[in-house]
Every structure is written in C-alpha cells, then in structure tokens.
Image (cartoon, rainbow over all chains, first blue to last red; front, side, top):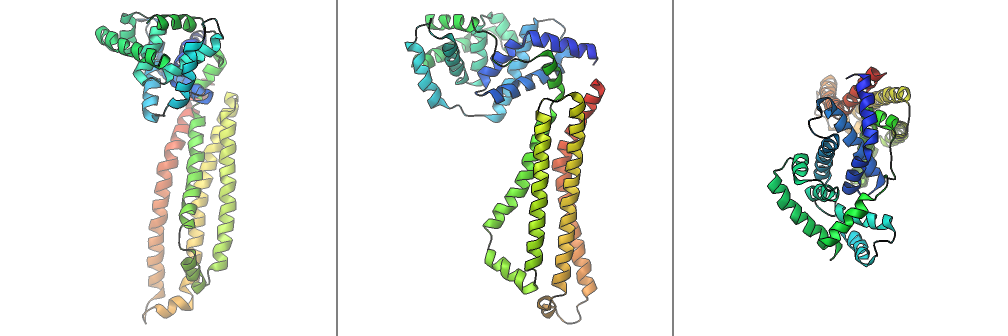
Amino acid sequence: MTKELEKKFASELEQNQSIIHKVCRSYTNNSDAHKDLFQEITIQLWKAYPKFRGESKFSTWMYRVAFNTAISLYRKSKRNVETTQIYDNLKELEFQDYDDSKDKQLNLLYQAIYSLNDIEKALALLYLEDKSYKEISKTLGISEVNARVKMNRTKTKLKNILNP
Amino acid sequence: MEHLEKLKDIWKNQGDSIIRFSEDDIYKMVHKRSSSVVKWILIISILEFVLPNIFFLFSDFKSTKEVYESYGLNNIMLFYSIVHVVIILGFIYVFYKNYRNISADSSVKNLLHDILKTRSTVKYYIYYNLSIAAVIGLHVFYIVFNSDEFINKLPENTSMIGIWVIAILLFGIALLMFWVFYRVIYGFLLKKLKNNYKELMYKD
C-alpha cells in the first residue's frame, strides 16, 4: 500500500465523513463511543479500500462497511439502551412544532433510532437518506423484497416510538 | 407515515456533525490502534493487582497470621508486601501514563517512541513479577526449612537436600506456569503493538 493511496483515502474519507458520523451517532450514545466507532470504521474502510473498484458508489460502499462494523461491534458489546430516559425525551417530540429548535428535534430522532435494533438502525438511516430499495439491498446484502418487508416493519416501529 | 416523511426534512437539513476529523486525523487513525492495546495492558495489570487482594481480604487473616508467626515470617512478609505494593502501583502509574500519551494526539514519531516505551515497560513488569516471586519464594523456603516448627515435624533421617530439591522443583513449575500466563496475556497484546509499530515505521 503506497503513501499516495493512503493520502487519497484520507482525503476522500475526510470529504465523505458525514456518512460515518451519521452511522456513529445512530449506534452510540456518547461522544467517546462515537469517536471509537468512527476510528474502527475508518480502519475497516482502509483495510477494504484497496479492493474498492468503484463498482458501486463510494457512499454505498462506505455505508456497507460502516454498518457492518457498527453491527458487529454492537453485537459484541450488546450495550443496553437506557430506554426509560429515551422514551421520556421522545414524548417531547410530538408536541413540538417543526419550526422549533431543529437541533433538539434531530437529537430526539437520533435517540429514537438508537433505541431500534442493529439492523433496524441501518434501515431507518437509509430510509431517512431516501435510498432506493435497490441501493438498500446492496448496502445491507439482503434481497430487495426482504428490504421492503424489513423497512415497513422498521418504519412502523419508528413511528410507534415517536408517537407512543 | 406522513410524520416520518417530515422527519426526512429534519434529517436532510442536519448540518455537519459536531465531531469532525481532519485528513491528518484520519491518516493517524488508521495507524493509531495502539491506544486500545495499551488500555488493555493497563486494565489487566490493575485487575491482576486488585483481584488477588480482594481474595486476600476475604481470606482468614487470623490463621494466616498464626502460620506466619509460627515460622517467624511476620516481619519479612510485611516488608515484601509493602515493597511489592509500592512497586506495582508504580508500574500501574507508568502504564497509565503510557496510555495517556498514546491516546493523546501525538506525532507519528512520538507514537513510535511511546509504543517502544510501553513494550519495554511490560517486559520489565513481567521480569519484576517473576523475580519478586522467586526471591520471596526462596526466602520463605529458607526461613521455614530452618525453623524449629518445621524441623520438629519432620520424620527422622529426612534429607534436607531432598526437601530443597522437591520444593525448588515444584516452585519452578509454578513460576513456569506464571511465565506462560504472562506470555499468553501480554504476549498477545505486545504482538499487536509490534505490528502497529511496523506499520508506522513503514509509513514514515
């Protein structure tokens, strides 16, 4: 692996890092864990980088590696979600007007995603990103039909969390 | 599902993450796995220190003290305990410092230096633990084997040389097991550090 490749990788990742941050924020609940996950995803992306041949979009590839890393770490640690606290906060979401503090709403949305299970987190994120089922199936390595079924369940679950 | 559609707007309008990394950060990140390894070295060394002491707290102080007294080991064991605790706490402090140094943003050159330092600290730590075990063991054997309490219990015509040989043999096996234990736990972590070191060297 040459120095140029490392530089190219670092530069591409720097430009597209918002994707990883979204994944990290969905799978972790504090900034330390967020940074750790970011680093782990970066390492996994770097390992996989020489094999990336541009057959899929760079963002699709990043999502795939990021989700794989986040899901496998999530399964390893099985950190419990502090559900009570999250649900308490979530109740505020429905009473808020959408023009109110966007940051707060976004924060609550992330908390709702965090309370989903590992696969649902990925689906919710891809849904919010407006990805096609074709892209979702590619990213998560499942069939399009399966993606549709799972997506409907995830959407219902997310809706129930946000409007208990 | 209209509610969810509205959430897409919030999602799309989110600005940059509060946490952002520069190209240089990412570059370093690829090579900066050492901090997690060093963190484990710190955790294991603390556990190794704390667990036996917790066990000791629940042990029968009185009977241990009686045994020590009967062989005249009280003072010597107290001396070794104090020395050992001070030295181990010193090691834990150094491990902690290594961990802090490696975790903090440092240049690749500093990182290389820190990794080497951590590797040598771990090696000294292992050597120290094995040496102190050997010194205390032999010293205790010497005192016990020369005590009246012990000699009076021996059957007549028992060869002291035989007892020494068996004691040293068994003790040697125990130390060997200790060494294997260290090799397995710390050896694994040291290897990871070494690999990272090599990668960093290659980068420079």
